[in-house]
Picture 1 (cartoon, helix red, strand yellow):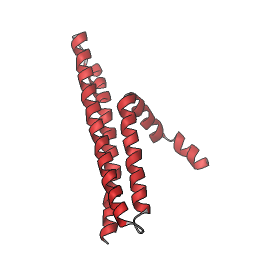
Picture 2: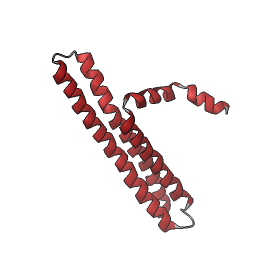
Picture 3: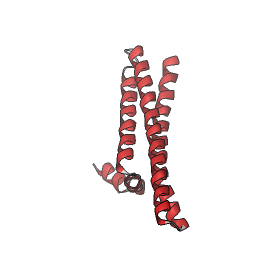
Length: 134
């Protein structure tokens, strides 16, 4: 319990939470769901590794597909965010560089989280495939 409280109070979790909220709820939640589902498939793949190799391979495939979906959601959210930012710039007319940079930062948050959703399960997939070949 104490370790959980320490982790919650650390700077990285508060920063991630802040960035998650900044990125917009719709795409960020979709990306988070993809990450959790991909990691769940990986856990099932590791648990079924010794007893059922075919199920383990199926879980690798599903984890791979879901992690790619999270990456695509990230790019889609970023593209839509950029379009909204440029629409706002067009409506306002003259925009300061700090406002432009802030809008672009928010637009790229979904891309970053999508890339994390792709990379983390990919590491597990590589490890699981290496174990299957050994």
